[in-house]
Image (cartoon, rainbow, N blue to C red):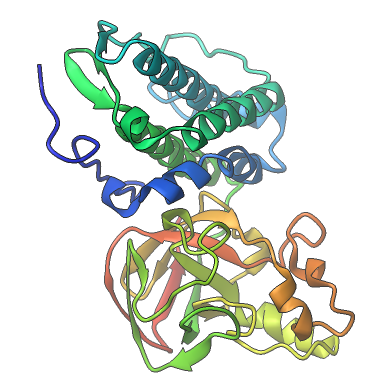
Length: 332
């Protein structure tokens, strides 16, 4: 039986989806549960039932099966957490087999997505009420000791890993962002709040943008929001409408020119300079951005109201220095 090698157990890192459990403090771990279902909903937006139910090859789940798998894992992890709270140290034996079966499982994806929302809401509520001793309670699964804190991070890793899978399959089926090339038009940072001001360069990695911080960690700056990206072309269009907005004003870190922005969504991979970035979510505008709009209507850049105009958040899958003029590639 393997023991623990950190406060909450072994560190999890993943090159594919950029997850690093060491970046997730307890507050970020708790608050990051709720956005999972909306992020997945954005990732599958506009796809037909036929596409959702189609496997890209016999050895890979369909998008619908991936969504339902995220639900299954969340349900299982919530069960383990509840067991650990009721009987600390309980041995639950081997985990269930959730592997691929030969025949495609036809999933009610909208229903599964609602159940994903319910499971992650339940996990969020459970975690929010724990004290320090409860956060560290353990269960044994497959001979491995796992704390509730480790499980809380692992369920996020599972969801973001499969977000990247869903984006890859969407791209493979021809419903993702088209291969494209643009440039970095600007880099912006601040010590908190907006506007973010231009800088000549910035080191960017999985922990975010060097020299940048946020006043409100509940809505900005968590690991799932490590980098904020936006389009210089969208900003120019807003200016033609008469809005007094400039690059960095709405809080984006990297302003990109020349990329078809309406095609960028959660699950898309962008390479900014030499750094691959996984788009995780559309950014929801807050009241601090009202000053950049003639009518103070920040929903002008809300994805739900105006698809294609929103800023996006991303996880950096590598590290490096980014400067204006660097290339930006939309990966095929």
